[in-house]
Image 1 (cartoon, rainbow, N blue to C red):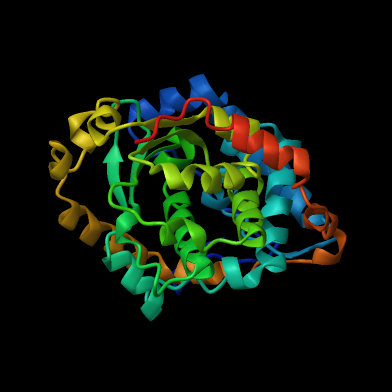
Image 2 (image 1 turned 180 degrees about the vertical axis):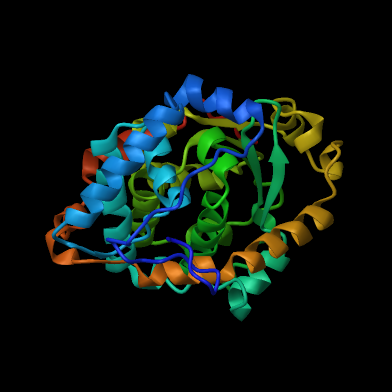
Length: 329
């Protein structure tokens, strides 16, 4: 079986047997999976079988989880195109091995990670009526005097890995609110181009996350060029899903009260939901830490990151064009 006694999943690429998957989410997610991802019981079972066979025979994958929860995040990400899901898994494994300082040892109990979690930088505020998980980033709560880009990137990676353990996130995807109120230049100026490229490549191409919308509010004028530089690394699809608003009032009008914090006039107690998310992280700590046991021969994947995607005309085009929908103070 894939799940072993200590609560961690096996990383044996050819286990003696596989656990039988059972769909346990509310009917909303079964319907959503069918409508948006082409998922039903038959396709899911066949795709899992094919992906497991591919992993077992893969010449460069040495260790990999083969449990349903892990493999379904890639199949759902690629809407049950098995070849595309396998490619996404390869890229995810290679990313973690190529940049271990960014994507490994993601420990919620490590003091710096714990402080970021407790500072209220990021909140999982719940699911909207369409089953999409809503995430709120409060940028002003990020202590940029203490936490550098690597800390910030690792924090986001930890949050992503924890959320991907939830099937409702795999199926429904994310909607993101980013509140830029009261931010200062240093919140934007600490990231170098190399940091931006590594981080955005992970978001765009390596993590199996379905980003449905990104809403930002109160982005200061001095940050526009910096954010546009960051977005030169973003995929066209992601750029299309970014919507910026002049005010928090304008942004919150796009969300149900059930997923808005009380400070926005909604129903969510941020302190309470942060305590619940910390519990979620603690419950899954051993599972997330055990991801470090996954192994792939990265020599065959170095070309994925060897070429720079930044050329002069891309940077210029980004600054001029990426924020056509942008409203700033």
